[in-house]
Structures are given as structure tokens and as C-alpha cells.
Amino acid sequence: MSFVLIAAILLMQPPADSKKALLEARESVWRAFFWKDRAMLERLLPEDTLVMDSGSEGMGNRQGVLEGADRFAKSGAKLVRLEFPTTEIRYYGNVAIIYSTYLYEIEDHGKRTPSNGRITEVFVFRKGEWVNPGWHMEAR
Image 1 (cartoon, helix red, strand yellow):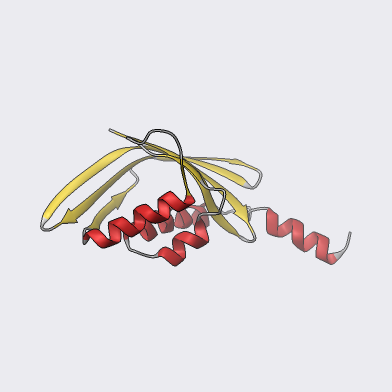
Image 2 (image 1 turned 90 degrees about the vertical axis):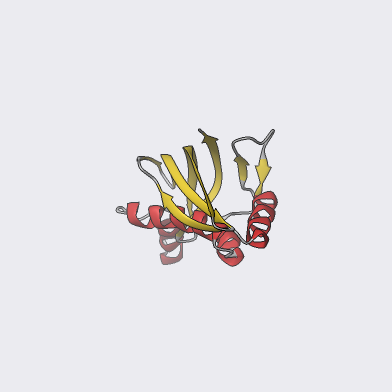
């Protein structure tokens, strides 16, 4: 096998102990959405992203997520709390599925609004990093 082929295979497979990097990628996606970091969102959400958000009919896509982040940024609200009280991870080759409960709190003009629920997130290890091509979110 050639060195190039071996290197390509290794770049497609997540490191043996990739839990920390995976959870950091997950946190980065959430924080990028709420912290107006469009460049990070564009890096971590591939073109083929498909999402099902609580309260939305049908399915969303990357463009819709980016537009939602832009709307949040323009609203003046800010994220003041983000937690994942329970998290379970299952790995399937270069795919990881994260099952979690979430809790976040938004402050808007001095008023704090908490949100919580469950989320199933799909991450794929591509070109040496975890990217987030989809999720299903269910608010409580």
C-alpha cells in the first residue's frame, strides 16, 4: 500500500480516543450558532446538512441554520448558559451519534428564557475533524 493511500485512510478514520474532540466539536457548533461565529458554523456544518428542529415542520438545511444564526445575532439576545446534563455516544466507523439532553438560557433585554429538551446529533469524521451534518431536536 502506498504512503498516500495509508494517509488518506487514516484521515477518514477518527483517532482511537476521539471523545474529547467530538464533544468539543459539538460544543463549537452550538456556541457558534449563539455567538455569531458564522465562519465556524460554515466549517462545521457541511453542505449536505439536514436538520429537524423542534416546532418546525419538515426538515431544515444548512442555509436555514445559517439564516437562523444570523437572525439570532441581529436580535441582540445572548447565550448565558449551555449544558448537556446527559450524553451518550455511539460510534460507527467514522460516524458518531450523540444522544443528549440539553439546557440553554438566552438573555434578551434583561429577560432570561431557559430552553431544554433532547437532541440526537450526527457527526462525521471528515478530513481530520468532526463535522455535524444533521440532528433531530425535541424541546420539552
